[in-house]
Amino acid sequence: MIRASYDEMAHAGERPEDSIELLDGGYLASLGVYHDLHCLRRIRFFLYRDHFYPNMTAEQEHGEASHVEHCLESLRTSTMCTGDTGLWTFEWHPHVAKAQAKTAAQRSCVDWGALDEWTRGRAVGFNPRLKGRPVGMGL
Image (cartoon, rainbow, N blue to C red; front, top):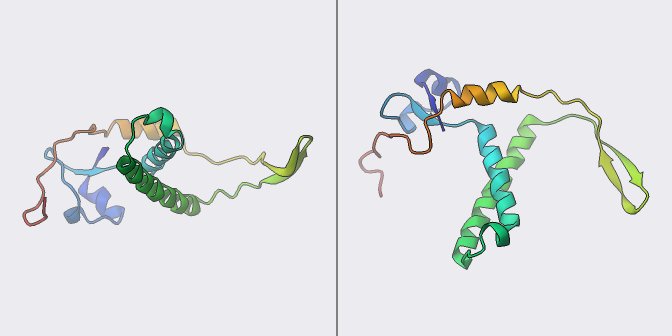
């Protein structure tokens, strides 16, 4: 989680007045790439749930399945948005019946180190101090 300024929120098309404020200024935010990575991790954990969640109840499994459905849809839309246009071709392998995909395409990537460093410099941790829930919001 990171701190975003009012101007950053507005520039991103977010309505600051509908977002959660941090007690020490700014708004609670995150970058989409971190949500994507979170989703990949949750999908992996669900695929190998016997290992990661050995005592999972049926109710918990249903909740995790719903979370994975959300993650798959989120990753689908993220993938369509970023649209990797690298060319993939196919080749035969001696002991595999179906053609196998391959690519030598060069990707144009962000500087992950710089992006992650920028994000860490704005981190608010996992338990930031938040302004309270508005009156009438419920719970």
